[in-house]
Image (cartoon, rainbow, N blue to C red; front, side, top):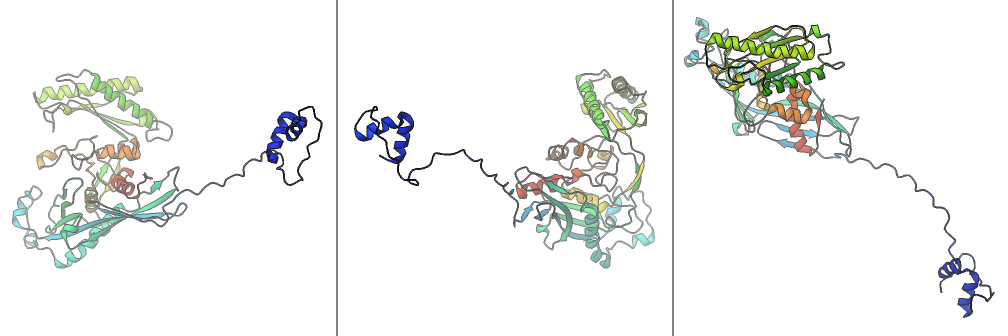
Length: 451
């Protein structure tokens, strides 16, 4: 029998029982069991010591990995530097192929030039100068880089992964093969002193694009300057029932949404955290095209008064000025049976824009954010205040930004005449990096955000 077995037996039955078992006796025998010499029998277990603290394991990181994501709109390259406090760089490369176009008499029939009186010097200025061709690509690249690089920072905060930050560089690369370009640009010469050609970018969201740019678009200083009053809150509230200014459930839902958002923006340090009488509200009623102009003007004003009256009561607003624009620039679609509402605490500011930088935003996948209600008369998509920005019907840019960065970032991109680079100014909002962000997430298989 092993010594360990004897110890167990001894603990259960005592020394007498153990001795009787060993000598064939019974528990009454008082023979003594000799223990084995010290060192051969395990000592009874003492108190258990607490385990030594395990040092925290190092979070996984990117190590020496590098990442690239190529799509039809741009290329992304990320060389991680980090983890924090080191900061890396994400490089966005827009590959373009430029074709230089001379002016011709056929272009004089375009809407931009129909009323222009051509001088003799302009009629002799149809050729794209060779020296300007050599400079144009460089000026375009500088305009795009200055307009878009290092406006925001990419941030990775994953509880199970090391923290990273990265700046954003934006570059333009000219390629000789148009099939390798993200965008094929026709740089159109326009005689000096003539009106500007309307530039445009065409193509579906996730495909290579074509663009027509006025040869003067990349030039600095910029001639496109105007004054705007940015709004912090915009909504289209409706639709009303046909031939009605009564607040129905759809209109009430829109009012509730506006008021909920208004209260959020009124919180401490929010963009509408000012005395209520310092906030400028706009109530613009609309109507569909069927019916007389005078009747629709009256109907649209009654709709504006109905919405303004409800908000004055709910929010404690002073009496508001309302306007009705009737069927102006409207069609028969029920979407025009509405009231456009805005709230602004901003002063009027002057903005300017480099057109080439704006058009690059379309090349990256972004839609316009300026108001152009009569665009359908010029062959373009109408853009009303509080519309969601649209480049193509394939993507909802507003929802993409909301999903990736939240409601605040998405709301900044709603259509208005404001300082945004996709509106009338040069300000790159966080949401404008949404497709750079989407590409970075795909490349790294991580979820980043933008600050």
